[in-house]
Length: 451
Image (cartoon, rainbow, N blue to C red; front, side):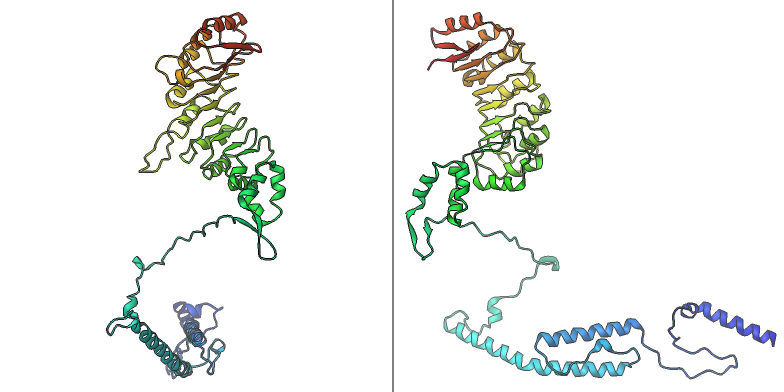
């Protein structure tokens, strides 16, 4: 008996190890077939029960059929297949499925007939006007449906609608228009200050659009603002100024890049006191064609940064024809207080052929040799330079006045607070050049041409 009982225990353990379902005590699912008894008699096999995955798959199929019937208006008897108990046999599912298909077919037949009738009527009407020739069908005339390559989803570029132009007349509450037109109102608005224009923008929508006209906002001054907000930048873009002053602000490179790409008509930009990290946004190909640029006292701006500004940008797109620097048309350049040398002056002479005004005040590395480079024969600055500021350049001496005699169009030379330039040398310069051009000595060592 002990041996028999021990063998029975061993057989049960082997069966549990062989079958993973039996070996897991947490799973309560019964086995598909009964195991033989120890007596050798085999039990009658029972029907295999459906697994949870098969039942869930059938429930999903029945839900799809219900969705089809609801989509086409099927209102027949609806069976709640989601509440089917797992003990139901597959025969009951087949019966309910066949009943649902019959109900759906029974209600789709009249709808398909109506659709065919409507298509026939449309073909008859279009055939009268000669749209469909011969025995052509509407589907043939429309052509086959084009599917995207690769079976993917079609993609379309959606652009916002264009902004409608401002109205020419001011609409009134009674449906009529004001007797004064837009041109007359714009003439009145041109006499108002910016603060008064902002008050007029609150009157109505028409005045709001009229007062934002770019002809009224040619100059915008945001200098010394504590913080530049996105709302301020969007207001600047809406007005499209010609001159913008952002001096001594904490504007970032991302903000300045976003701003200058949306101001194609900008011609004067002042960035005095800003950081080089922000000013470096001008090195991109999206920089507008500026005429005046103020970079005085920019932190971190030296010879290498001047080279990056004046050389052609590296982000030009393939096929772009104009690959020159975006600052090649600058006529007025302010570099006061920067740590630059003669290397930067050579770049100015080479890459800025239209330079007329140059401010080099407080530049400690500017010497008489720098003036000799600017006024040398064959340079563009010798003929185009009209105003130059060399105040507080302590390394400039009286010799520089001799070099300025080469410039035929010079009109103003500022040598104030230059410790090595004497007043006697300035008077001597006026006396020698008075044969062709008349100059006066206004203030201390400020030479001005008499018009």
